Image (cartoon, rainbow, N blue to C red; front, side, top):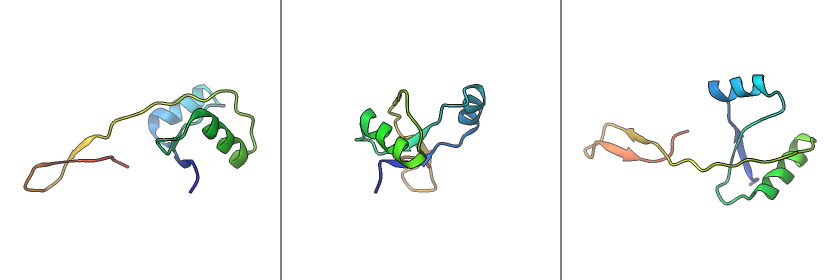
Amino acid sequence: MGIIIKPILTEKQTAMTEKFPNRFAFRVVPDANKAQIKEEVEKLYGVKVVSVNTALYAGKRKSRYTKGGVVSGKTA
């Protein structure tokens, strides 16, 4: 399994890509560092990566039809 899980394709990300055509967002494994991400993107897409920015997001709480009412976990 590679470091990159999937590209992020949301309305917010699409707007950012239109404003800055050479910026892209990917969901990656949590323990990957910037050097590993840079190497993987360069290998997969054949481009030169100038910089990598990372961010950690907590999972959202989703309500499901359960006795407890709310089940925590990651969405998407």
